[in-house]
Structure formats: C-alpha cells, structure tokens
Image 1 (cartoon, rainbow, N blue to C red):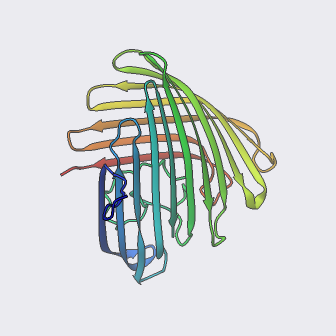
Image 2: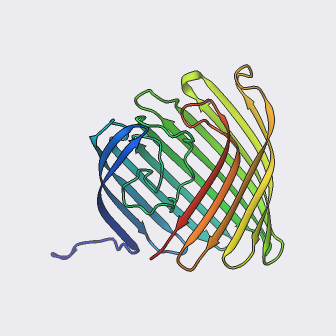
Image 3: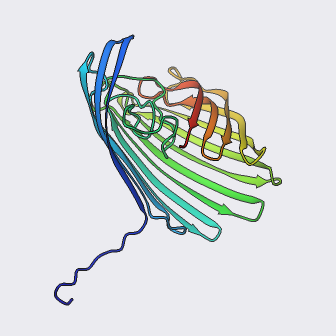
Length: 302
C-alpha cells in the first residue's frame, strides 16, 4: 500500500442521533411529591439496502431523583439490532433486543418517560412480557428472534418463526423467567381486500428458581381486511391448551386465545387499537397469568 493511503470500509445509510435532558415532577400522587431528572441519548441507523436490510436502534441514559422516593433511579439501556435477507420469494429476518431498566417499561423505545421519544410510537420490538407495572426492580431482558417467509404463489405465503426471551432480576426481587416460542402458518389472499390467516404457536415458560415450567399450544384462524387505503382490521381466535410440570400448581386446561386490531393511517398521523386475550408468562411476579390487554396508540407528525 503506497504511503499516505488508508484503507477504509464504505458505510452507507442513514444515521440519526440526539441528546436530551428533562425534569419531571408529580404532585399529590400515590407516592407523594416526586421529582426526577433524566439525561439520555439515542441513535438509529439503517443501511437502506433492499436485499440485505440492516437496522440499529439505541436509547439509554440515567435518572436522578431530586425529591421523593428513589423508585426509577439509575441507569437504563436498550439496544436493538435487526438483519434481513430478501431473495426472490424468500425473506429472512433475525433480530436481538437487550435492555436494562430500573423498573417495568412504560412508554417509548427505552420504556422510560422523559427521554424525548414520541409518546404512542412503539419501538420495533414486541410488547414487553412485564404485564405488571413495577417500581424499584432492576431487570435485564433479552429477546432473540427470527422469522422466515416464503411466497408460494400470488395468493399464498407461508411464515415460520421462533424466539427466546430471558427475564433476569439481578437484585433477586423478581421471578426470573425464560421463554421459548415457535409459530408457523399460511396466509391466503382471498381478494384485493381480504386475507385468511392460520397460525399455530407453541410457548414454554421456565422458572429456574422454582424448577417449574408450563407449556401452551394454540391454533388460530383469522381474517385481515383492508376497508380503505386508511383503515385495516385484523382479528383471529382459536383454542389454547395449557399444561405444566406440576399439575398441583397449574392444572391442565383448555382456553381461548383472541387477537384483534384496528389501524387508521392518515397522511402524517396514525392511530391503532389492539386487544389480546390469552396466557402470559407472568412478567416476573406470577407463575403464569391469563390476561386481557387493550392498547391504544396515536402518532401525530408535524
């Protein structure tokens, strides 16, 4: 290599980053008067490639308590990485999301209010398994997942996926949990507005502290409908079988799993309502739970 020349690897794509400082105060709440400062930073990157898309999102910072109880104080971090491969009729996506939080997440990508993230805009990761809002419980959460899709013809496609989720409470004040899941099913395009979706899902929840595990198997059939360019709905339902390693604690049973959503897309804004019913892992404080969850999200673009 001639003197003065430096080898480099070209990096293309879009990188955005920012810093934020905020102060929040709550008066006459259930915790009394409470004030907190937050210093945070965020960064996102996407390479913009059609065949090998890669994206990264990071958010993290530190919370200081100015007055009141010390709930929520400390370091918080979240890093999400995703790599895709698109080849003719095949598409493959692998991702990993790891976070460290001083409490259960509430809003935005990091799950911490006051970081400057738009309220109502979810991160790229699935909803958290921590279904109970907790304070002063440090938790490490890692989700690794992959999906593989294949388009069979104009009207039929098939998808298969798997994930592994780790909940670890390093202070010992929560119930550690490991979750393994797999799903598979076809989608049939009935016409320009309607699609029929079938899905099978297997989930296993393991609790190392109690040497206990439980397993669910579910099968659903659903309909996706495009009412207009702005409005879409999804609804699916089916049976869910539950079994466990200790039937005296959690007996075998058969229930119902239901998922439904309504999405409205404006030119710059969007709104959605989702509902789900089924068995979850308990979120660190229960050995499983049957939950009904309703979520509303609104995004306004200036």
